[in-house]
Length: 187
Image (tube, rainbow, N blue to C red; front, top):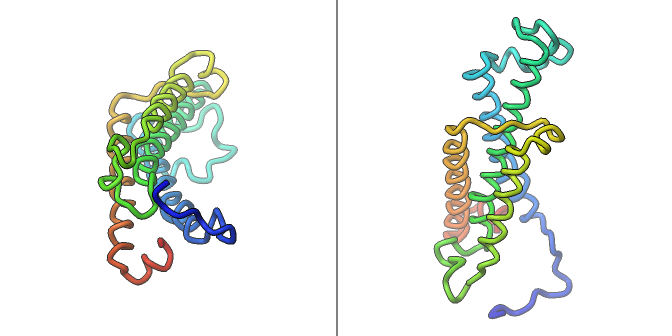
């Protein structure tokens, strides 16, 4: 309310917003989530990335000495790790970093009087419950073919979320310092 309203001629979604959301955060989050998928498959199921890439019709009973049920379970576990990692990066990286497009998170803390927004925390808690329901409740596991990931993947996912958060904070810092390409594409 302290800022003047946006001009009626300004677009709600600009090229900079699209570049930031899709080509910066989107690619970063997609890359990390895929890495976690392949890490799970490598270390817990024994499939290297080269085993998985372009395996299509080979993913059936007998592939790498596994039964179809074992393959289905491996895939459900790996997809759950991917999904959880992506949600964590959205909730604890992207969500915290992009509350404002130009101000650092530390300049606009959600509990400070000037930028107070307690719904911020309610939204995160609700999203975490949604994630838990999809990953842990048998009814949702059957519908979405998910499994509850191993504990270490929670910590790795949170660590990746912190990386996403600080990457966006670095972007804001570079924009404020008006470093060439950052200013043009990222505000």
